[in-house]
Amino acid sequence: MEFLYEYGLFLAKAVTLVVAIVIVVAAIVGAANKQKQGKGHLEIQSLSEQLKDITQYARQVLLDKATLKKLAKQHKKEEKARLKAKAGQRDESPRMFVIDFKGSMDAHEVECLREEITAILCVAEKQDEVLVRLESGGGVVHGYGLAASQLQRIRDKGLKLTVAVDKVAASGGYMMACVADKLLASRFAYIGSIGVLAQLPNFNKVLKKNDIEFEQHTAGEYKRTLTVFGENSDEGREKFKQEIEEIHTLFKDFVHTQRQDMDIDKVATGEYWAAIKAKELGLVDEIMTSDDYILSQYPEREIFAVKYSQKKNVAEKLGLSFASVAERTVMRLWNQTRHWF
Image (cartoon, rainbow, N blue to C red; front, top):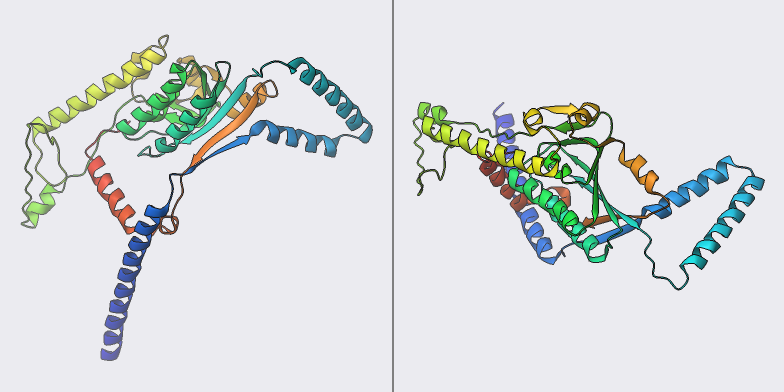
């Protein structure tokens, strides 16, 4: 038994050493790769060409040779007439740019969104349209506030902005969605949740029970209203609630500015609804999936998908970047005392 005990102790030490070495190496590799990596790259794909390929393939499978030959002849004639009409004229055919935004709690995806929108604004004409396929249940106030401001850039440029919600646009997600000129949603997508949430655990009693003292020093009466480890006061709680109400008022005012025909007091209760009910409340303009909307614009518009991709180093891909994990852990703890949409 003593041998097994000694062997188990040795094995535990060996495993601990190996894990420590792996973490250190991963951190070094992550830091080195982070210095080498570029900002990212922009990808633009023609969805019109993809739809054309799908149509041609389906016809080849389903139609007989005679029908295919007739359709090909008709298409050739129409294309020739189109090119003749455009000869010597500036190409002003309308285009639609499609962006996908799938937001997380910290809304870090806004970094790619801003690049995508900037790229579109550099080339778009007044007759063009931007479609944002949005999916988000909300998150931090400052992150989604910036994301909504990015979408506002499209409207400020004079371009038509359409937002399509296939699954969910709640809280901060709806704050983004309501910026649109036209807001579409699939029948059972979750819409709404115009409210603010703030929560945090408090371990003060646990610390006291174990005779552990916690000190926190601030300059400014309300620098920190509630804490995770300190003893919270009724005054601090009241101030915290006041901050939540103020942010909720800003949220309501913003939504009402974008959708003035809606009874904001009726919908700004923190509730969410299926899109079919949300349409009755004025939260949504039309019940339609993003796929149906894209098809409704084809082939009158040239349709392009715009995506900005950030490069990831090896350590990040393997999830072994110690620095990244530490940073996110600290940010999560800090955000516990922040407000969330």
